[in-house]
Length: 219
Image 1 (tube, rainbow, N blue to C red):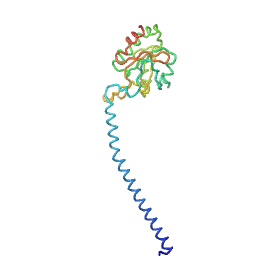
Image 2 (image 1 turned 90 degrees about the vertical axis):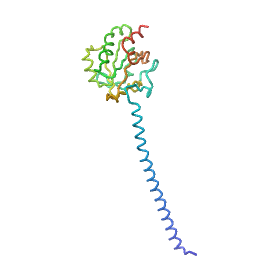
Image 3 (image 1 turned 30 degrees about the vertical axis):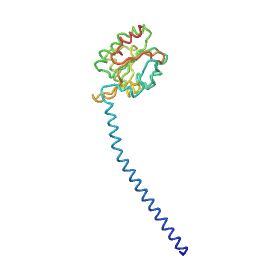
Image 4 (image 1 turned 180 degrees about the vertical axis):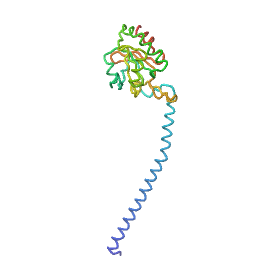
C-alpha cells in the first residue's frame, strides 16, 4: 500500500508530465502550421501573379463587372466635374444626355475624332433633345481642362468628367487594361445615351462616335 503523502507526490509528477506532453504537442502543432503556411505562401503569390498576367493586354475585361446595357440604370460612382467630387448617377438624374468615354486625353483618336465629332454635332444633338454632353476619361480634372482648352471646346458645350480612379469605368464594366503597353488601366472607348437615369443606347469602339449616336436619335 502506497502512503498518502507518496500518492500526492506521484499525482503531482503525473500532472507535470502530462502538461509537458501537451506543451510539446502544441509546439509541434504550431511549427506544423507555420510550415504549411510557408509552403502555401509561394503558391498563393504565384496564383495571384498568374491571374494578373492573364488579365493584361490591350483589351477590355468588362466581364469582371456588369456591363452597361440598354435598360440598365446609370452606375453609381464618384467622379470629378470641375474639380468637385460628385456621384455621376446623381448628375444624370432627370436628364436626357449623352456620355462618351475616351481612354486618354491628348491621344490621337480621342483628340482627332471622338471629341471633335461630339463638338461638331453638339447643336444637332440639342435639336434632338440631348442638350447635355459629357466626356469622361481616366485622367485628372487638370488634364481634361487643359485638353478641352487645347481642342477649343466652348464652355457649356461638353462637360469634362474626370474618372481618375476609374471608379465609373469599373462600375460600368468598361475597363481597358493597357498595362502591357505601360499605359495603366483606363476606360474603354464607348458612349451611351441616358434618359432620366436609364440607358437607352450604348455602343463601343468606333460605333461610339457621334455619327452613330445621331443615327440612333434620328430613328
